[in-house]
Image (cartoon, rainbow, N blue to C red; front, top):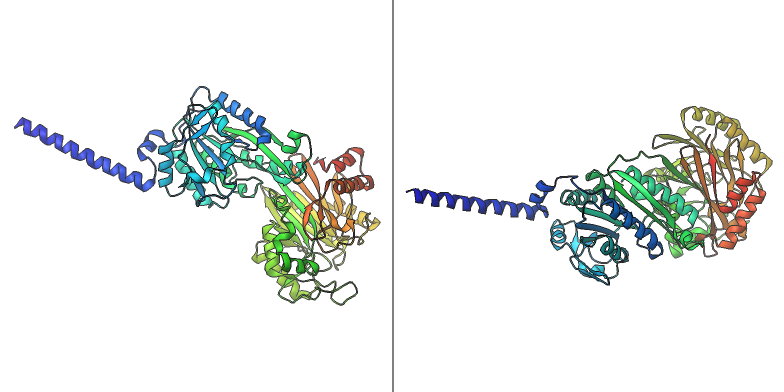
Length: 592
């Protein structure tokens, strides 16, 4: 009898184990990850000193890559890294998924880097990642870092992951949780990424400052606007690090190919950021960035160009210029309506030659694609199609999420923005409006009492004059005396000098942004001004742009670029240090 009872107990135990195993297997299949491992690991549990870091994959930056790997290996020397999650952009858009992994091993001269096949397989079952080995054949974002993985973490297995831009943010959140919850205490996350591309080293540095601020503040929402070749990878890095409890970002180095090679690769510059996450608190955001552009006109020959080439053609070679800033502000030199153009095909002297209207669909696409999120409408062309054209313009802008200010029919049409707790007021002065200088000055004084920064966008001056007028100078000084912190000018269609008055910057004219005035080098050469406010100082980058006869915008070629900056330095009534800054295209003004 006792033997029968024992056999019965054993049978019950066997059946129980069978049902438990079936339950675990079912749960694994449903989640795509090891729930038993979840219970053992726990969210945030790790024995590493550094849980994640950023490294370049550009071979020009190989010393920076070696340095960051060596530093992280040293910080993790007391805990052997067993697994590496290596995330890269999908440079060639290969494969079929938003995120793609591989379970193949990698044969290097230094030996084999072994894939964590079980982890890759389970990740593939999650539905968030496709396992496609063939997609990795050309991906240098992975291949270029594997020798460093083998050198500094020789025992680690690898889980490579290519991510395509456009990966939905909610899926990034889900993937970060899966990776964090199912990574043991010896898993290291590496983001293989290069940053600002195809620009010039001054603006690259300014863009990188915004990116570093995002990394330090773990601001994943702002990550979608930074100048990087893998936005979802950046978001995944920050979310993974935060979930593991590693929120302190330490910047190791920021440089670019121009600095590394000692030559300004205008339009071909690539920038690099290295740094890592360790235990500690994230920093609060302490940076904001704005960019100002000149006159934007999308009718007449520009409309014809858009019809022939499409609207993307105009800024195709400089689109990354518009990345990274909190606000991109331009002067919208005409109304957006459904009315038929009257300027196409005309020549100076013809009726309608100076009456503009911009196509609503093409205008909205241009503004959205180039991240222009604020426009000044205080100019001499906004009423070309009367009040109905003005109202249509405001409707189109509002529908497409573009803020505006400067309505010539409304004396109090200013714009207030709150960026990271800093209150900014944007005010228009339009010399062609009935709203006079004194009214604008009174508005500036009122707004200054309630805001941290008051910026005046002024439509003034004399067309095609390379020097500001006495009238412009007097009005600019009056606005600053009233409380303005920065003045941006447009209307002359050429770039005019700048001035520092009471420690405030005045740009008398940025010239054109998009226009069909191909008759002189001065009208084809223009200026974009970017600025970053960092604590007690404001950093300005002067970026000359050039409109080719084809109508396409490019970074101004080196000879024309230097000629413009030299002219501005010589003609501007500023001290020696500011002149030198103008020549370099980069200067800093104290906010005190």
